[in-house]
Every structure is written in structure tokens, then in C-alpha cells.
Image (cartoon, rainbow, N blue to C red; front, side, top):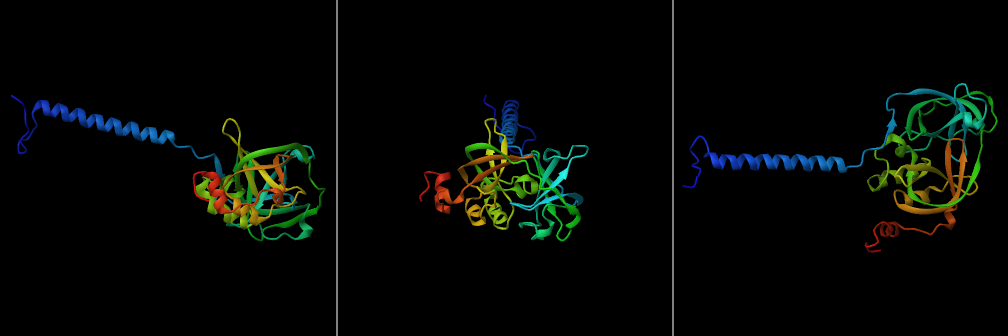
Length: 265
């Protein structure tokens, strides 16, 4: 005779109980496997750090052009550009560092700030009003060398968020934030993925070594672009010099179409 379950009985019949146990166990196993697969499919956050709340003292030589940078000597190294680590200087919030007095350029300075770093690239969020002269003028530290022309595909990012203040500090989810940071004067980077998926960041400059115009950067923040220019190496910095005027004009609609060719213009 077939088993059936009566609701007021304390236990289900043995056959029905076995089916229920197997069904529940199968559902639990399937749910666990699904959760594990979803976690494994997520891209891990990059190893980027912002030492929020940990303010340090820094000393080094200030370079003001094209973007403020502190050249900090490496302990025990000879007096050459290769013996210095370069730290991009940014202000608090989504702003560039406060305007620097011309007389501080190429001088030894002292400042206070918070470290930001990712993949051997480093920046300092400078405490407003903390920069002071710390010695006489120094020689201009530069070992700029051309690496030849190149055509690279990547994403324009703001170096402050990308290096660690935001994580992730790139992609569509970060586009609006990047646009605001770039319009506020944060130095621009061009993040390019190599064949292994690792990203290299190039500091963007104009052909004459000046800062790239902010409106041009703001419009293209977070979009996948192909840029043609000349590669340079300056100490531990990779640089891509471009001519914004020679780059095809873009609109937000055009950039959206570039990312998604099926989208209406």
C-alpha cells in the first residue's frame, strides 16, 4: 500500500521522510555550490592602499610641472634620479594640491600627508598648509628618456582614486567620481592592461610636457580609449605624451556608443 502523510501525525512515513531528506540535502548542496561559484567568479579587488588617518612627515625635492611631485631620496643611494622615489601630490577631497608658490619649485620642502599606493606607484594626500621650504634650491631632478611612439588602449583614471583612495577606482562604477576628480585637478593616468591582465599606469602629459586640459579628461573619464603618443620613462614613472587636439572629438553619447556598439547614438 502506498504511503501518505497525515498532517497531525508526529512523523512522516519512512519512505516519504527519506525523499524529503534527500531533497533538502540536494537543495542545500546546490545552494552552497552556487554561492561558492559566484564568489570565485568575482574579480578580486586590487592591492591598493590608502593609509586613512595615518598622517606622516615627508621631505624631498618639489617638482611642480606638469603635476606636483615630491622626489624623496632612497636611503643610502647615490645622488641620481634613479635614487629617488617620486610621489604624486594631491589635495584633500577631489581637488589638486593648493597652488604652490613659484619659489618652492625645485627646492627641498617638508610636508605632512597620507600615503596612497598601488603597484609601486605612490601619491600623497597633502595636509593643506603643511608644505614649507626645507633648504636651498636643488638641481632639477629629471632623467626623461624617450621609449618611442606607441598606440595604447586603456582607461583614463584619476590617480588619487585609482592608486588606493577608492577600490575599485576604475571602470563604469567609478566614472562619475573620476570625472569630478580630474576636473578638480587630480593628475590623470592611463591604465593599460598587458597580455597577462596586469595593468600599467602611464601619467598623461601633452607633447610639450604640460598638463592635459581638464575638460578633455573629464569628458573621457572611465571610457575605453585608444591613444597615440610617445612613451617616456622618468625615474620610476611611465609617461604617455599625447596631443589632445589631434584626438578625435568625443561626446558622452559617442563614448557610450564606443563601449556598446549596439547603443543608439
